[in-house]
Length: 151
Length: 143
Length: 307
Image (cartoon, rainbow over all chains, first blue to last red; front, side, top):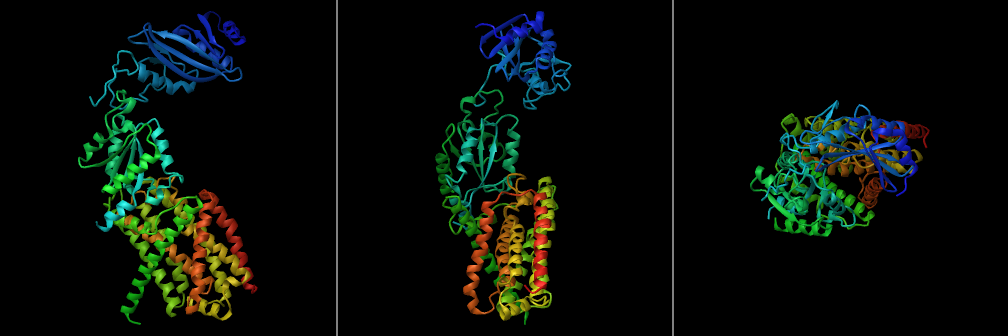
């Protein structure tokens, strides 16, 4: 897939912080960054390039937990995703909530479900798991085995 | 058949409880209450508070968070009352049977509060409004 | 007039008007169903509702004031029943006293008061919110209602007796026949819509907004009494309007006229109910204070000039 203008613009704006820029389809651009560069890269893409912050997603892969920060450029019909890998068993990353206040709840959800600690998060409380859910058990990790309560 | 028992058969007021459903069953319950299927001819009315209800329409997998709330709602419904368990998820969990947040079956949760609770089961994913209507009528005929 | 006769009239009027009210409630639901291209409930539906409610257990919340909570519907029902008896007494046998018109108007606010007191005594914030909405609504529609009745009083020569109004209408034609009478009747219909708690003015019991408003904590027998009270009011308000605007039914032949008018008033309530969305409380207040009050004041002025 040939590079679009947006991908070139990302390369020049982010410079060395962007370790790799991939564009598997016309509407998706994946930018791999190091965990410690995430707040600065988020600030650049969200505020500097004027995009809309959509959501944060995460997945448990063999190398650790992969966090994806999705930003949408509505006028260019493209989603730009910042990919970063944090190591298990105690994954930690700097929170982007001081930069983007709307990320507060989704980071709490990622913490509940995948166990990623967000440093300098203003309210690191439980969000979506039940009040009596045991601490330290993260349902979306591969180690967690689902069990039917009626068996 | 007593006067009040006849009244209960002819005028079941319904309160809807969602204990963690994907909303598909809730949409079908809403469809059932629209003018197309006209359940008002059987006296069925949707009420806004469990204290006015004769029938609890329960959907969802009964999550850990929702179980005490479902039990509280059942306690607040004046007896005699019937619990309609709608959809496969409320019956056995459906495709979410081993979901991490599921506590168990809806009727087990309510039997913890009242071992003599009356249940009517309407399976389906989601059950058609016609199936729900037939389920309600059959349950009322057996009262 | 001995006490036995009074009690007999009261009992007959209460039971009869309640049955009439339950059937009128059924007419409301059936006409609503037909407008929505449905079939609708059978004729015994409202009776089945009451039967079912009488068979349910009564739950009194721990935060409620128990005796106020349980007695509020009884007081509302009793007030409406006395108003119905006074109206039937005036129409059927000419009994009454000076000022019984004021007494009837006062007693017809008892249902709203019962709802307010019951809602506040429930100990539930949603009920208190519904009760405060009902207070604001009563505050708004009582003024145009009373002005509409002032129109009738002026036309009848200043009498405050229901019999005086009936005699005046027998002598010189129904109040509805005059220009000011028509305006006053329309104002009274809209105020009646609010008094009965029908859309567009069912703001206190807005199901989609605040659960069941003041009735949220009621269950079983007290709820059955509230249901009967609302049915009784649904029959009493049209009878009151017929007495003061359409000449009542003192003479036997007037019944031929009264029954279609009763059905007409009922159908008017139902049609307005089915063709309008619910108003917000501030919209309802503005409508009654700045829309209907000047209109009914105009009717009073026209009545003074004899129109």
